[in-house]
Amino acid sequence: MAQQFSNANTGSKPADPYKETNRDNDVSVAQKVEDLSNFIKGCKFGMMTTRESNRSGNLVSRCMALAAQEAGGIDLLFHTNTESGKTDDLTTDPHVNIGFLSSSGDWASISGTANIVTDRSLVKQHYSSQLKAWLGDLGDGTHDGSENDPRIGVIRVKMNTAHYAVANKNVVSRVAEVAQGAMSGKPASVNKLREISEQEVNTWRASH
Picture 1 (cartoon, rainbow, N blue to C red):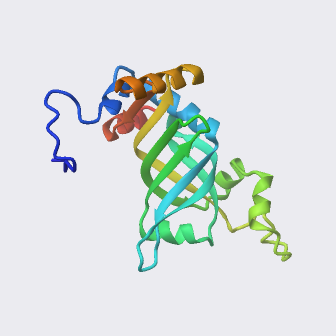
Picture 2 (cartoon, helix red, strand yellow):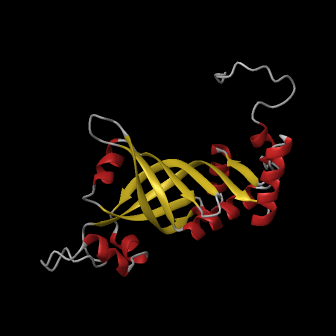
Picture 3 (cartoon, helix red, strand yellow):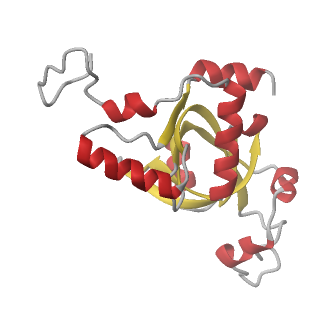
């Protein structure tokens, strides 16, 4: 049972009316995945949260550029320097969260597990010359930031579940809805709050 901090008895009314008002359940898995995938592509950059491999066990987040998507859009690929701290984190604990946020306030939270892939064909398939700016050229003819640089690997994040919110109205309508809600106490209907469950993810992955 979820802990109730307010100890409020709301009777038949939901204690979290915003969530109830904006929850979007009447949509197919295919539509949920397509909308989420398109949102992620549009954001391009996400914050990857890992658990530090040192004794602190703190959660840390790093900005990552999306390299590609697999399994019909649910699994995410990111290039990485295999000698970086996050690879140590993932070796110790593969559980990650990837957060995406747009300037309009739409967001997505992807929970999953990650592994580090050093297969050169996969690295080259999604390689971008911009990676050289992050790895540098060490001048030894090997560690040069090119697609052949052995430091470059791929972090593959396999989705377990997803939660996200996308706007269901334009900016003007959303502002008006919030203003009206502030005056009337009626929760603003501004987002489509969606969840993709672990069962839905597994079913989707089996067919893609």
